[in-house]
Amino acid sequence: MFKKIIAVGAVLALFACSSIEEEKPPVGGTSSGSTQGGGGSSNSNNPGSSQSGGGDSSDSNTPTGSSQSGGGNDISSSSVPSGPSIRSIVIASNGDQVSEIFGTFHYTFSLKANESEDLTPFWDIARTDSCKVEKQDTRPPATCQLDMTNAILQHKLTNQYSTLHYDRVTTRIYVDGEASMWKGITLKQWNLKGEGDEAALGLNVSENETDDITDAKITSLNNVISFEYKYAGGAHEFRLSSKENGDFWYYEVDATPLDISSTEALKTIQYTTVKIPISELKGMGSYATNETPFDISKVAKFMWAVKYTGNAQNDKGSLVLYDFRASVQQ
Image (cartoon, rainbow, N blue to C red; front, side):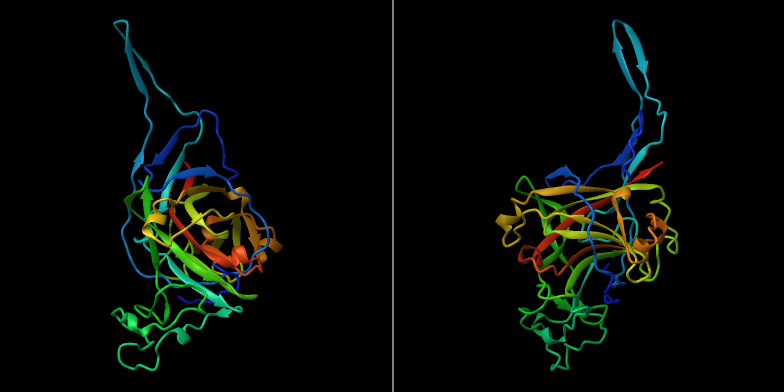
């Protein structure tokens, strides 16, 4: 998450003669493999809010030996791995569902001039009936939302399950012009106007927002060597944040074309797969000062963040991503 956001809401190892075990990818998105360059400076991050959810799923294929037959004789040849295998683990495939290994939903939050964005100007707080900002168990009516022109994000607002916040937005993934069962999680139409403005998608590793991988006792990501996901849209930072504000590792990702203005436009989106070796992650905060090597056990949340740069091309945009996974050495 961000260095400044307060709570609201590797080298890719190549082994000769290695065997590969990979989970079946979701049927969605046209992707082309590309590794973006990392580096640059970054602002900080903070805990966001996670909505509860559950359910784990895993589907993997394990390569086996092959048998060939010919000339009346059966000739058997098997491939025996002489080095470690690499397994692809799905972390969060569908933005409309909970993470396969964390059991948490993606969420969205924002900063305005280095402070949590005040969303009350975009909410009819004068109404004391169904528009109360306090926690409630039912989704408030859309009539509570006011003009969002000056908001950082063009999302719907809600106070369901939490105080007033941006609601989660998903985008249908199309394959060869046909709708798939997959939805990408979306950071929709950000508008960053000044220093300290930021917005991000987040994914906590636990429903307990203060937990990191160690606290949550998650072992499936031990020995991770890279992360990857499919995306289209604005330039952003992929961040792996600790429980301490401002301490995280990050990787910069370039922009690609994205038009989510209509169903017809969605059908033409070309999704790019970005693969991020952990050796290319850079530290921020004390991790930069102390040159702390990446440590998955310290990660509390994953972030896809945008921040004000003064560059109009980057300070406005949208981002859609899905099929977030990790490669783990076994």
